[in-house]
Length: 338
Length: 254
Image (cartoon, rainbow over all chains, first blue to last red; front, top):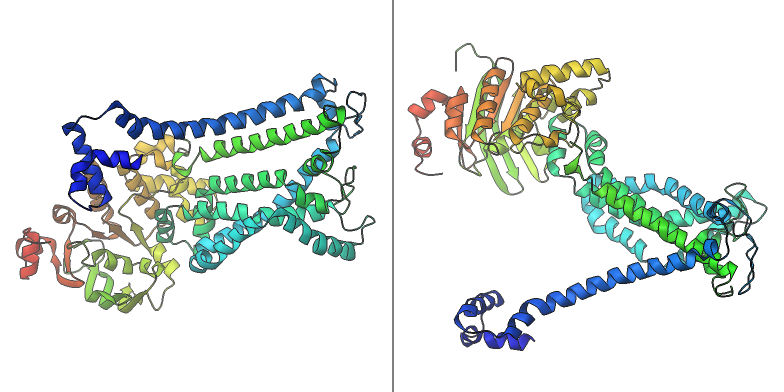
């Protein structure tokens, strides 16, 4: 295709090796001079655009298809097996019948839902102050070493596979909790899962918050210093409020990552189907339960369907997070309500 | 300068280096109280740099070295004063209006708040007084809770002046405060500056020589880091002593 286009720019080519920009200009002016075929315009304009549009549409269709598939599978619990949504959300009786056609068991997923909410909430509580502090440090306090050392280090964190986080949690954190707190059930616990999640989402929140802080216009900082602010006053009275929406976006992205994490949590949470009595007791969550049982249930049966419903719930929650991010980032600093 | 005018800021043999670059080459000048002093000169002549040495905004930039002395009411601002305290006494208005992304009210009371004033009634009083001083109270009094970013450029700049006034400084530095504004807004800012000199000492950097003749009592002409000529504005523009000043104000270079 490249060669066909160049063939039309014969005058430009005849002039020898010119910079690409010049060539393009010449061939543009040739458009008027020589007759171009329909195919030329098609290739030049519509082919590329068509490919890009096709790729974009494919992604949209794929996403919609996954959503529809989950919706169809996930609602089977309510349509085919006639359980109520309230039972699924708030009952802790999890005893679905695991045969292809049998029914009548309990599909209460409250333990898993509570496990997910609790571990993610705790992880967020633990790590948000550290993340924002780290983001401030690498942008406002030590921007030079922040950019050279801190930022790449944090970014490496993102790339570590979750199985590694889980394994480290399993070999370091779980025995540590066992030795320090002596819980009855060993170190597998809500606390262990929350800490592993907290470490995993630290880089997400930190990098997004740091980007938001860095993009705060310097004019705000100068105005602050000009009014006699100390550096800390500039940071917490001007820079942090101005980058509020970006920081919130980081927190929600972190939360979304924590919610979707299965493997690392499954390795340390203890996979016990009971509400945790305290932070040191084991429990289970949505992702770990799905991962553990999805291959073991009869396809289309009650147990299988209930797991699909849990997958649908995760999908809906992550959609909610994305929606929230759009809602927040729509209100950038330049569009403070008027 | 009228004979009795008291010196507010006294600059003695001030040198400033950006790394190897010698940006200010031994500036000596006395800035009188309750007058407007204009700093003029071509781009890159050091006038803005000089302005920033007066409230130590240059401290925020890396690789800046300063020699010589700047005295505010007799106290050396680089030796005897904390930069934070200094900037509360020597406020600054910038080239681009830079209100915070907060409400109009919160913009004005920012300074009083960081100085520890929490009382709502007191803050409201300061807000009204400052906005009145900046001649923008009538325009803004019904929308104090709205975002400052919704204002026009000229209103934003007067708000920034009000925000500076709320800190109750002695001196106000203005770094080309009207270069981003239309002629009507520019006129308002100039009028405001002339009203404010009753209570404040004002130093204004301007590219616009008409502006200097309209508003200032004294004018300093900078060129390549030197203070070429400094004197009464009328005198300097009608009868410049230095040939370089004459060439500049008649538009033959710069």
